[in-house]
Image: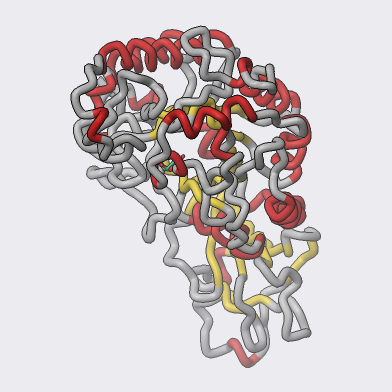
Length: 432
Ligand code: GLC
């Protein structure tokens, strides 16, 4: 039976923190064509293994990563401990295909966890249910395996239960050898491989035994497509704790079938790849990502923003610049993000609204001619108005020009045609 009281307690911090860093890193950073390169190019194991021998992230400095995430205003971070290629960034006793056996010779996960905790961030691990390296994971005929079309693999005997023992064993290693985890981010279910095909109830019992407070995504049941049983009136034991829309922000937020707000987190790349892609320079501007963070929160969701470090262990300069610019905005405006959610008001045409109790944060993203209308807010509801970035008082506009619209509060912010913050000027309204 789904314990909703325990659930709501478990996700409280998550709904306060709102903004996290996703980190996709591994051997695929060497070919530098994204984390799916083995599958999309159907690379046989023997052509991929040389990357294992070569992997030597001489610049890996998780402390620097943690500082960059913190400065950006991120409150938690999730690192790939194992992606679909099966390469383990942690010192698993169940495989030799791990970072400690490469020239790196380090437990990259342990160093990540130590560094981010030291900066006061909560920590999570992504773990791929899919494993293209393990001999007992389906190869020929699978939807995604690099050898899915290889006839030579057609009649090879595979024992999926032996893979499940391996997968459960590794998850138990992560849950018992690395201290308190705040997030477990599984990825992903497809076709027959969903729910009990992963022995998910048994997996969840083990996880909850070791990490009772950890929150888990919904991909033991679905992928980024589908919501899973968390969106129903009767979630399964492996529903997870949040829905994980990928490369999209739910158009109208998300509610379960009983109309209750769903806990959700949009995971979004800065360019168009999760893993490092040396040719993909399609980075989203910080201004867009700030507005998307606000959009997520205005719809009761979180944003997990991805970086893909290169083979040497460096977060790309473009990503660092974006993080720094987001951080500058967050430094002045994080009160309109942390602890906030949607207001229930319709989206105003000049921006978005987030709310935290009696504080309504009106995000003005389009200036007005003359006084700025605060759609949805009536003058008599307002106790005081402040410009969030500097705490300065803003007065309700009383000019004759707004006299025809007594039900809408108008505020005078700038005498110039420009708003104080070109990306998002936040007005903090304290409601009576
Ligand atoms: C998709 C991709 C995977 C990525 C994940 C992030 O599932 O397959 O590469 O890690 O999205 O959400």
